[in-house]
Each structure stands twice: as C-alpha cells, then as structure tokens.
Image 1 (cartoon, rainbow, N blue to C red):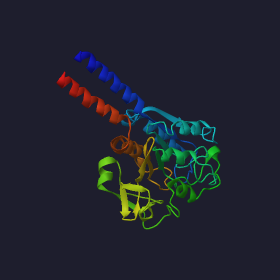
Image 2: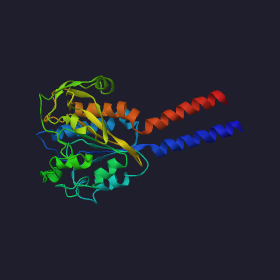
Image 3: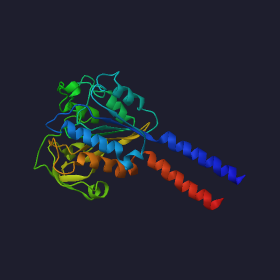
Image 4: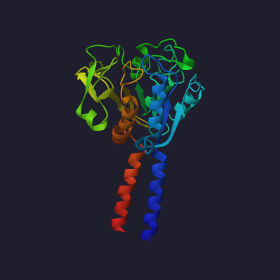
Length: 288
C-alpha cells in the first residue's frame, strides 16, 4: 500500500510542476537603433532563448518580431492576454527596448487597463533593456507617437515618474549585482532609475548597480500587492544608448543571468516546483 501511495504522490507532484511552470515571451521587433542595434537585438534574443538555465525554467519560450505586435488582436497581444490571470507567473522580455501597441497603445491612449498593465498587476513580470521603458514603439520600422514619461507613470501608477539622465550615470555593481548577475560590470546608464521617486509607492526596489542612493540601473521593482499570478515585477536594465556594446553585451547574458539566478529564487517559476518535487521525493524514499 505504501508503494502505491508513494507512486501516486510523485505523479501528483509532477502534475504540479507542469501546471505552475510559466512561459516566456520575447519581443524582438524594431528598435530605436541609436540605443540598441537590430543585430544586437537579434544576438541577445538568440542567447536568451538558447541559454540552458533560462530554458530550464519555462514551459515555452516564444519570440515575437516585426508584424507580431500591432494592435490588440496581434499575436503578442493575444499571448499577453492569455497569460494574464492564468494562475502562473509569466515573463515578457522587451529585448529591443520598445513597447508596441499590442501591450500599451500610444500615445497613452489607454493610460489605465492596458494589456501590459493588466499583465503586471495580476502578478507577472516585464523586463526591458536599452531605451526608456514604455516610452514609444518602432513597430513597422517607424517611430510611433510618443508616450513619453507618461507610459511608465501610468503602468507604475506613480505621477511624475521619469528616467531622465542625471548625475554622471556611472553605475557600480552592488553586492546583489555581483551575486546574481556575475557578468555585470560598471557602465554608464543614460536612463537610470530615480530611486527616491519610489518612496511611499506600491513598489520595492531591488538594486543591482548604482551611482548613488538615488540613481541606479539595473533595478527590478516588485509590487507589494499579490495578484492572481503572484507579485508583479518590472525590471529595467542597461538603459544606455549603446547600439553595439564593446565586448560582451550584458543585455543578453546579463538578462539570462538575472532570470536564471534572481528570478528563480524570487518568482514562482518552474524551478520552485522542481525543487519541491526533489525534496519531497527524497523524503518519500527515506521514509517508505
């Protein structure tokens, strides 16, 4: 009887692993080439998609490019809506640093209740690299009307929030940065997080590199409120006008390390279910 109980328990735990594993969508559409080149977007996307540590965390990884992102009935919009409130924590990576109309219609035509805001508020995760997050789109290869600072202000629900350049911009890795993003090196951020603007907000900031107490990048903001899918998160990383990075581009390997190392510990991704399975299986073997 004990043997059958153990087998049934393992089957149930395997089912939990499948149910709670999230999915990753990458938007690699047209970029603002003064901030990140098309070649860099393509190379970084390929690196993340094929990174063993990233692949192990998700049920599926899908790449959405030019033509997939226009309007509310586009493939990217449909993916976003299907992964909102589904009981799993899913991730969108804006590898090109722009936010298309499928996620947030420009110019700020839906300041509340956009697809990307709903996605985050129900407990999912968005990662942005290069340009000012939620600022505008280059879908179709043409610069859209700008959301300007209003895009981030509306999604974060923080009036007056901005990412304007200030200070020297030189960011030095923190202890957390060195631990979770080992490839992270000092660099100059043109669009740093203004840390003081998040005081008394609904967000806690986790800082991986900073110039001083009020200027930082990369950073991930974690919602203090839990939604159906978990605690929503927004990461903006390496927001620097660098079309092609000299040496190793951190916007590829750095994002992969952030996902594999930090998100695997702090988000409800597949690794948690796998860890629970191995721990419980070890307990069953010892006690049968």
